[in-house]
Image (cartoon, rainbow, N blue to C red; front, side, top):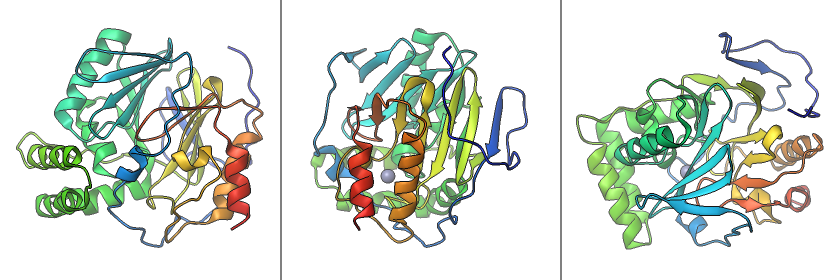
Length: 308
Ligand SMILES: [Zn+2]
C-alpha cells in the first residue's frame, strides 16, 4: 500500500477503542460539541431531486432488490429506493466497514446477505453519519459490529427513537412532511416495521470526538464532527487511501448551505481545508442519499463558507 500524507496529529489520547483491530486517537479538539439543539427531524427529500452526478466508469448493477454501484473491487454502494439512501461497503482487509444502514431493518438484512455473498467477510465497523432513522435503523442487521458515530448520534437516537411512542411521533411527522407519495409509503412501512417486536434500536457505541483517526484494518478513517449542517450529530469521514469522502452533498459545490443552529461556517471550512491539506485527490464524495459525486469541488465549498 502506498504511503499517504495524513494531516498531522497533535497529541491526545484514545477516548474509546482499545482493542487491537481498531483505535481512535483524539487529535486536535477544534470545536465545541455543538450544544445548540439543531432541528431533530429535517426532511432531506429535496436532496434527492438535486443535481446528481453519475461519474463515468461506475458500474451499476444489482440483484433486483436494490441498485448497486461498484466504485472499485473494495468499494460497493447499495442504494435503497425510494429515498435513494446509500449504504456503502468498504473492504478494509480483515473485515468490512459499512457506512450508514438505511431505514428499513428488513431491507438492511437483505443487504447484509448480499454483502456476505460478495465479500465473504464480516462487517466489523458500522459508521452512522448522523442519527436519523434512514441512516441508522438498519444497524440491527449487523449485530457483531462496532457502531461508530459522534456522541450526539447516540444521544439523539435515544431521545428520538428509543421510546416507541416518541419514535412513532417522529416518523408520523416525517410522513406528513414528505412531498412524494413514494416517500410517504416508505416512511409508513418503516413506521410499521419499527413498531414490531423484532425492531431493535442499536445506537452508536463508540464515539469520535471533534477530529479523530480510526485505524480499521488496512485503512485510516478521519472523522470530523460537522454539526449544524443538517443535524448536530453530523460527521464527515475521509478515507485517504481510497480518496473517499462521506459528507453532505453541499460540500461538493459552491453552496448555498442550509446551516442550522450550532453550525460554524469557519469550522466547516477548516475541516475541508484539513482534508485538502492531505494532498489526496478526492475521487468521490458519497452523500447519504443519491449517487456519488466524482471529483468534488471542495475549494468552491470553502470559498462559499468563507464568504458568509
Ligand atoms: Zn438526515
